[in-house]
Length: 237
Image (tube, rainbow, N blue to C red; front, side, top):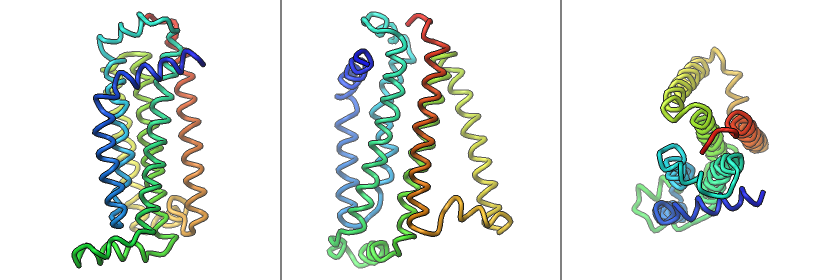
């Protein structure tokens, strides 16, 4: 565990000056927008990918030899990378939730121009069960991005980055096709009952779905990390 924490600290120090200032600025913009009841907080999840992107670039390039010079086991390096992905994306999800909470309760939108004020006011007066859909969408984005990144990291470690990118494109394409098919079936009411499962009508149901999404994401990240360590920990860095 000590080696893992050392690697996380090493990685964050390595990229902090490259990405953290930009992510911090974008986060500030999202929070300010939330104060005026403009819900762009969901983009915090996407922006937090920037924090770990340079780490993934280093790990999957010729610079990877740098890790081989460090007095740590390969398994510690792999576990640190998966923890960085999961924790960073989870932080983005929590920040999105905070922005939505501010959006819901702030009244600064009243000083905006009339059209923007009307839009923001409609959001603040939206029924709680409908507004909860924003939280559910953020949780779904967290789950999808985190699992995709962990899968890509696993394939990059076991094979190589080129193979990981090819497989990632296939996975995303299949997911997009399935999501489109389900959306069309729900819209045409052929699978309308599925709508209440994917988008529960009650607030409690939405938060239960959020909890399930987070649990599934953490379990998937742990499983992919375990597989990666088992299959590639003996390889040279």
